[in-house]
Length: 245
Image (cartoon, rainbow, N blue to C red; front, side, top):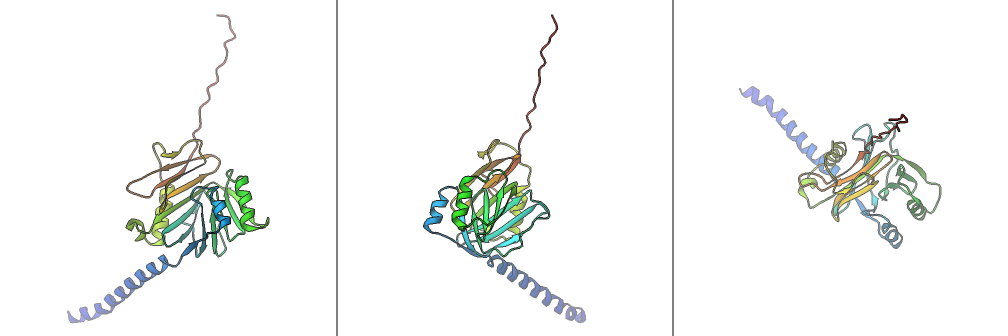
């Protein structure tokens, strides 16, 4: 019996060390991607053109939770932010170190030189603001994304603050592909974008061609902002009876 106990002690010690190390890694990972809001008069004027736009500078994490999704994660002193592109080409990835992010609802500008836009939703207002932000016309542009979702979570909310970065990203990824039923609290068929919530927590979505935006307030989970495929309306063709009756 003593031999068994003696042999078990090293195993138990290793398990304890591994557990502590895993917890420390989770906490370290959670606070590795800090950023600060950029505020100046130029940005203040641009923000007036978009609901829930945000301009950040700091450290960002890039993740592909599924083959057709791409996520950019960061957090400020007040909130945790998840920017999720859905219906992405499987081969697409971002191979840069992101130091700056400008979220303009229908697209994201990274490092002032790469713009990722939602197909069909990039208008002259965004084009003008991109020139103002970058002071050049040579930025790389990719305007063929179908869905862009921004979710932000109040750090005071224990339901989300205690989640690891990967778990929070997976929650956002999962909610984007759920089967959605019922009416929309905001948006609806014909809408290319909508937002729900505000301030310290909420979500926004921009939907490209073939989709419409739908946003709902939820009490038990993340606020829901997603894109649904547009309904196909049946067309009935009536032929005039040319016979004499």
